[in-house]
Image (cartoon, rainbow over all chains, first blue to last red; front, side, top):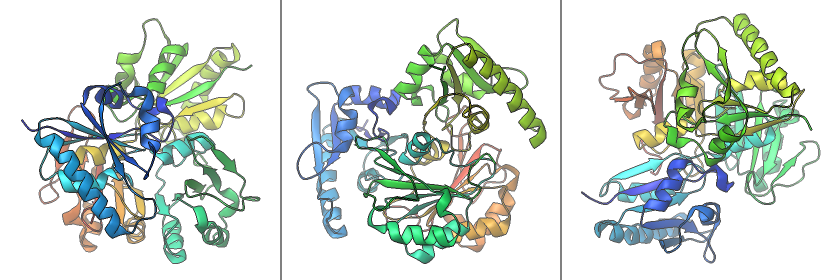
Amino acid sequence: MSATLYGIGIGPGDSELLTLKAVRLIAEVPVLAWPAPLEGDGLARTIAAPHIPAGKTEIAIRMGFTVDRDGTEAAYDRAAEEIAAHLDAGRDVAVLCEGDPFFFGSFIYLFARLSPRFPVEVVPGVSSIMAAAADLQAPLCAWDDGVAVIPATRTEAEIEAALAASDAAVIMKVGRHLPKVRGVLQRLGLWDKARIVERVGLPGRRAHDPATVTELPYFSLILVHRRGNAWL
Amino acid sequence: MSATLYGIGIGPGDSELLTLKAVRLIAEVPVLAWPAPLEGDGLARTIAAPHIPAGKTEIAIRMGFTVDRDGTEAAYDRAAEEIAAHLDAGRDVAVLCEGDPFFFGSFIYLFARLSPRFPVEVVPGVSSIMAAAADLQAPLCAWDDGVAVIPATRTEAEIEAALAASDAAVIMKVGRHLPKVRGVLQRLGLWDKARIVERVGLPGRRAHDPATVTELPYFSLILVHRRGNAWL
């Protein structure tokens, strides 16, 4: 029986939002891997830290924040080989994933490389979009609402088409795209209904009023519902 | 200080997919409420059961599965008053919510009624769409993918517009709408890429091949990605 690769969702930031299953596997699996910046622990390890037993073998998957796609692919190739060496030696490996592993998670690129060779189990986690709705006390969707999740990097026309085809939307990673996103939402009469939060679940978390917000960091989200509130 | 209403996401079915925070609050909060069919415990209580201490005060929010919206509103009115009586008496109340409370959750209707009168805290949970991606080993989205969540009750034109405006989609609660959904996906050349699961996270869970599926229950989901796989 081959060793197993686990992709473990650890939620949006609060160390109490790990699932029981994530906590159990972090304790049981002998090797932990986690995405990290070029120096330091990174967010995933910090979130999971209270649940990591002492003496665990750990692999930091180091990657610059601004590397190009080719550079990113090379970094995942190296990380996959390091993880594969443990799996080949019969040691299970758990990869810590902020939020949910398969919802914009970097685990996807390790899964692509390693799932043809090893058994994989994915433990879903609480995603930032659910955490943002809870934080802002803004129900995301109800009844038979259609929902669009839209990265703010998309073009104006793409954002507008996705909003037109849905009742509710989550616009992710707003950052420097704020003027574009605000412009589209204003044209559609939705800007006044926007709920905005940066760094949800993290230190420095801050909600914003659409009337006064002037800038947002990369880790920010806008929720908007066509009816204003999902329950109407 | 008024008593607090908690909306607690308990995840998609596996009792180990509750968060540590959900488990702590279920232990601490003196009154638990849970949505239920006209007889029996219902899914939410069954999922949370291993974590419910003996002797807890419990409120079953009973509702027929097929009641009209007026009947549903009346049932939520009654449940809100029963919960408000505990809160007025200084007793915190935790409402158990399958998946995430604010993502198509019935907690939204209690929140609408009670949040003007009482402090509320929402604990986000693992949603069925994340659980389905993990179960099917089908990453939902990566890079700057746009994602549509589409209830299968929507019209063919609405489903087609939402699919056209996104890279990845989750079609929820397929059930008797299977022929319509399949027709739209076939027209768009996406049916062969569909991943299908019924009762994800629950007893009777079953994945289906798009080539052979003939019927699906209400609790079923279709995941589809325009590129076939999110990592491509």
